[in-house]
Length: 427
Image (cartoon, rainbow, N blue to C red; front, side, top):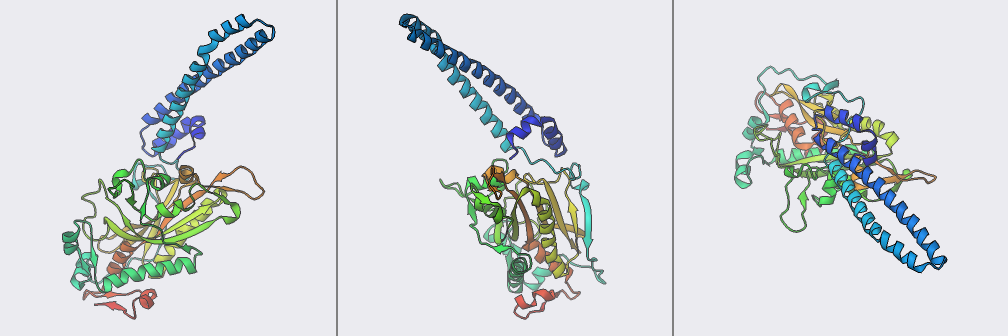
């Protein structure tokens, strides 16, 4: 959430930033109207308060002078001022509450170096790694390959659950598990993350903290009971909220966490996109990376987090490119995002496999997560960062497609051999 005072004092700059995100400015106009009303009410309340103080002094002087009747008459004259001030204070509180409600629905302000654009067409490629394989046959997509091998079953998954679910069998299930363990091992032994296993259901307060509520309620799977739980759309929600409402010591920062979880998304509004295979599912698995940092460290840590996610693809030998997202393609809570896109031979293009975002103090302000620097001083908001390290299902897809043979068999990347119980090829 944006800081109320910052928005009030920098309204034109915020309007420009949110216009670059193609966000309607009507709510900001209402914010400005409420701010004018609030200032007017405060000014009027101050005047009433001054009048009450002056009357109290006058009444006191009259009482000291023995002019009780005059004092009582004066009390009657100013009796309504107390009620008037209470009414004005209520109007002030209502205006501030409405302003804060508007802030809960405003996206983050992009960093200065984020490219301005309306959508993904304005994203800027910043680097590539690896060369896409040149096949001497026409490569198949992961669905045709995996179903022929008996390691993927979408038809029976649809019978059991519905569209956008999948069943992995045999070596396919083993490969998914191998990827999870491999990613966690790399991040915990090479990249200094602490592994954590959070709840897979969260409350509304946590969803508000990371920005899923109130704006994106339709994207969630909600549990229908009085506790109002929702299934997590990403481990970002429970892990980033770990220290919500607390004040950390600066010596505790930065904190690095990695978590494997299933993720659940309704994919509201995305029907018709990537309906075939494992690219866009209602349930999928992900290894998430979370960082909590001091403000002056977050940009450097953002670069490191992105490199940590890229390292997984390098070790797997999967070609990828990294792009910085434009203002029109960024997520709600992010101030800057790098997307890592892996090469898919069947589509002859790069597809997103990780989004690595620096959210600044946007999420920590919503969850009241702060830290205090050594030597004391006023608590400051922590900066939060997150990224997929990686989306497991999409990594599975990339391996199936990039390591396919003409006979339909799949080679297993060498780094995964220890996790596959000696299996080097899926046949």
